[in-house]
Length: 212
Image 1 (cartoon, rainbow, N blue to C red):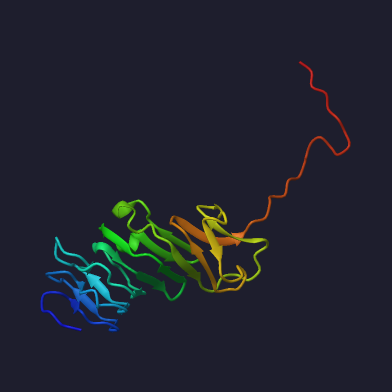
Image 2: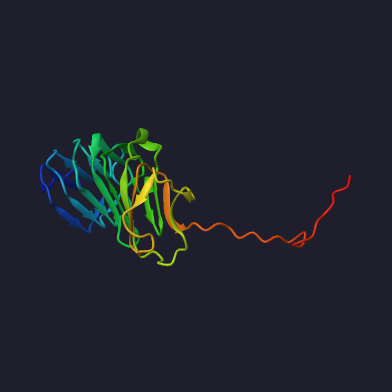
């Protein structure tokens, strides 16, 4: 890794670096910058970023095809840029789960933390930003889910996901559940039981007559 007094962290043509903890405050250039296609498989965990100078990014992939970057338990990432075709990037919240994109994500936005969310039994990726640059196939893992869902299913925007949109690698009652999605919106896992309907009137076996 190469240090730069202007950037908070500047990595150029260097791989397998791990940065854990610390704060990047009031950077006068991009807070985290990666440059060079050989800057692969770098890991950033729980790095606080705040008050990055206007016109710069909290995280910037300055070169296309920077792959294998892991962003783990990052408190907040605001402005961001994935240059050109972008790069294979993985997002993880050690409490709730992980998103491993299978295709490069690209584009720019103002709030990466808002655009990619990993919550308790819910993941969300904003498919409309960056001209669909985040709307790529991915493998999703949820941690510590219930193991007693009745007729378990993967849900997309609240409805059971079709086989063409997602499929599971593990049992959906495994606790730690992994599945694939072809594109993005909101995903969760739950019971897909038909609702119980109770007829209150008329009583069973009776008939009614309608008169006008």
